[in-house]
Image 1 (tube, helix red, strand yellow):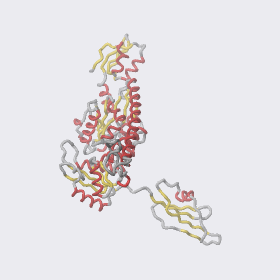
Image 2 (cartoon, one colour):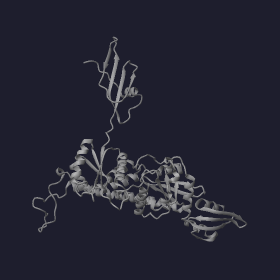
Image 3 (cartoon, one colour):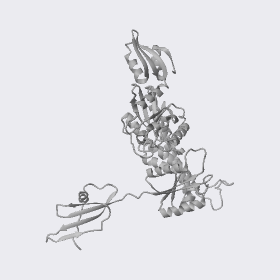
Image 4 (cartoon, one colour):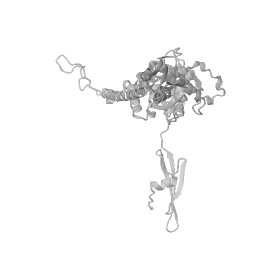
Length: 502
């Protein structure tokens, strides 16, 4: 046997010019070394992959290392939907399926095929119907699909039956959205809320493997006081499935308790903001409409911005001074989507309360999207579910930088609509002025005369309210404008016009 040459990982890194990325693994090394008699010795393995480099050590050995990507291949997803011509929805089945494709890509899957089945209602056994499910199974096999995703929430029976027919994993729209939320939850609050939603979704879908279930079941007590039940079935009485369900229920209880603590903390934070009499404007909108981009541009923040659905889950609040010198708090919130899982709405109650407690809503609409109106209607439906549909609203029609003629946009379809581009800050002066006017409309219209010795109150009026007119007389500074109701007591002694709406 020839001599053994040991090569350290440091030499490999030098050959590559940098340390290996965690998902890259060196698969071969070509070693060349000149012996003491001048005879070259070479040891080599077949090389694979596209990443390679070489390095010559001080000892005369030439090393060549090559890497391959060890990340798992993305799921190959096949998407299915039922078009039932539901008159209560404004979404077309093809548009909804296109959105499902975007969700799948956000989750990391590659879409390899789609199928839409026209039915009066989804089949209660196989969702698509047995015949169409068989056709989809053949198409999935041809395309090498490893995952099928349905555009509706499936019952546990539908999911099991589809998996038997299709011979691959089956997810529904709810499970896909929950998976995306789990990937993007970065704070403890977000992770708690996502885990709660996932557990509540999975609980009714727990299925025990037959071999792992206890063959003995419990029953009611017999007449003699012993254990009842069918003959031959008396025994310990709790199956593995029942144990799993009990554990999930216990975890759900723990998560609800932890989230309630988060909710109480957020309530205290809102109380502190209320004590400061600062109006709160919540940024809402369909996912990927540009909410976080606009939020960052207005507040000079660094909230995560990605061209992905649900890139932002955790609410962020920042201080913002309007051109009128009025101060407000701007809160970025989670994006909405059609058929938003009820588990998420319930689990994210603590987060979504930021919307319900806001004074004004700033809805961001991607006006370039072909379903912009339907997306806005979906936002309205979610707001109605949260009890916030009637709040004053400003609509930012975003991404006009992609339009050839922004002036052609019909703004009458949206309340207090302003054309903007969050990316290049177009339309911001008009937007901020509109926000100020709508916020002022929620306040009381007052006139006060403040002594010259109360410059602090003059400053407070400018910062917390919206001044319409300011004059100076021998009696002091006269201010007319809008003030938050929380400040009525502070200025009551100086008021010359009764507080009220104007």
